[in-house]
Amino acid sequence: MKLFTVGPVNMFDYTLKTAGMQLPYFRTHQFSDVIYEINDLFKTACNAPKDSEVFVLTASGTAAMEATVLNCFNENTKVLIVSGGTFGKRFEELCELHNIPYDVVRVPLDKDLTEEMLNLYKENEYFAMLINKHETGIGKLYDSKLISDFCKTKNMYLIVDAISTLFADKYDMSELGADLTFVSSQKALALTPGITVVAVTKRLYENVIVKNKKKTLYFDFVDCVVQSRRGQTPFTPAVGIMFQLRERLQKIVEYGVEKEIERTNDLATYFRSKVKNIPFSLPKYTLSNCITPISSMSVNTRTLFEILKDEYDLVALAPNDESVLRIGHIGNLVKEDYDELIDKINIVVERLKK
Ligand SMILES: *Cc1c(COP(=O)(O)O)cnc(C)c1O
Image (cartoon, rainbow, N blue to C red; front, side, top):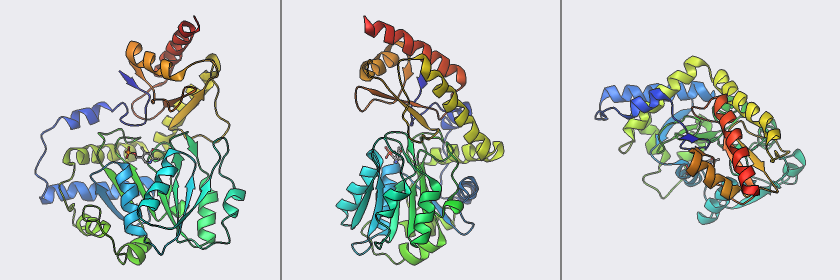
């Protein structure tokens, strides 16, 4: 089975091996060393400011989105949400649910986020911006400099969901001026789903999170940080995934974060160059290296998805509609996998014509 998905994705052999090991008990100084190493490697990998706090939540990415809203905001902090798809919408729902006042920069489906779109909100006061750097729902990557400049000029906190962009595209927390960033285990890290790593700057942690009253026990970031500083977690973590995470971060840092991104970019570019051989087209907006959405007027992508999966063991992302198919480039994939995919798409397309 080949996964052209965003998570779980094809795991690397070393991760599969680590995933099979007997787990140790975790309230030990030996396990604390694993957490310290993860924290350091993660800071290096996303270039978080040296004095940032890093901790791990045993939960999927949406929990980190919700926990961030709970820990950083309250009914007196108005936020600006950049919303251009499924995950932007999720931030809107979370703010709505937790009574956080918000405005929305709505990015049209077929367009990039522009300075003009942001400038409509320039005169208003906001506490923070919430953005999914890569809107996975449609594969759109937002412009770093645009977001960064806007937040710096307005002196707003910048909260970035980097779940599907970290290690797929260049991501530099310090350069971006992001105050909080999180990433989940099952995306470009290519690990078992179940944990999300959070990095938060000293300024956001001390000025906001520590002082903010919140109604949550499991997702209390202060508890997470206090424990992480001593190499522990408040509750039982997904111990096995922590070992996978340490190893994967070691490999990425050793290999070079830039080279890992280049590897993904190579795969994305290779696949995109081949799309001309199938009756599909690419979107005009800026794409992440993580996925490529391809659309067709003539092929039903739901049927295509099912046949590729059931007859050829090739799994794309499940389509949201009948005209677009999203193909992933993260995890353990090589160019030959795309040759095979393109081949099989052509075979199925021919069949569906009849
Ligand atoms: C995958 C993803 C999430 C998290 O989704 P979960 O199903 O909760 O893991 C959040 N934001 C983005 C941009 C994602 O791609």
